[in-house]
Image (tube, rainbow, N blue to C red; front, side, top):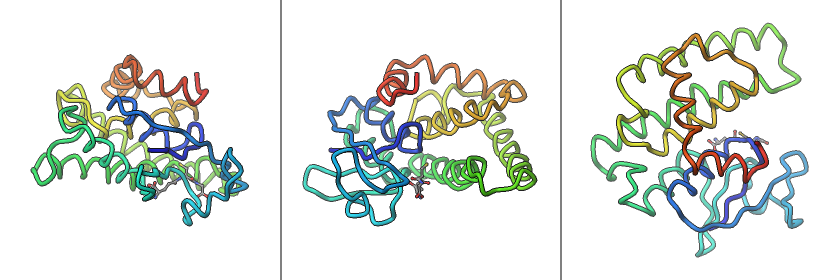
Length: 201
Ligand SMILES: N[C@@H](CCC(=O)N[C@@H](CS)C(=O)NCC(=O)O)C(=O)O
């Protein structure tokens, strides 16, 4: 499989998941402005939506949408614990978390990086994000990882979003469970290796 990615973007989440799963893979960097890849291809021919991530499977199929890629990757190694079995209630809990991170956090952070968004609008966005982080802080009060004792692909997604919070110099100390969680995530060798592989350390 080949992951199309841009360093530090949301493609970091499936990249972490691939490494956590121990799968072999190729990487191809995407220039999101030019919509080209590092090998000189037109990225719009890979993913007409024009954004990362995209995962090209060995049979040539291309999957898109971070939450789908995360689950596809986890399902390649069923014993890894990266996702509960498809069809189980626990799997729906995982999807609930992935959807929450995608719609309430991932997409919430986007405007904070945009030069065309006013400071006032960014401030309003930040207040919304803080509410969502407070929810996760409460969730993490009695558990090590988002789903409990097992690290899952939802944690790869949240780790990615938290890296943006840190990039924006948000002080996580207001949410101590989340701050401790961020430390735990960064102590995982596969996560650290992913940051290194994308040149982020
Ligand atoms: N719905 C997509 C959104 C992906 C997305 O927002 N990608 C951003 C980077 S984090 C991107 O490539 N933006 C460039 C663009 O939209 O042109 C998903 O969940 O994977």
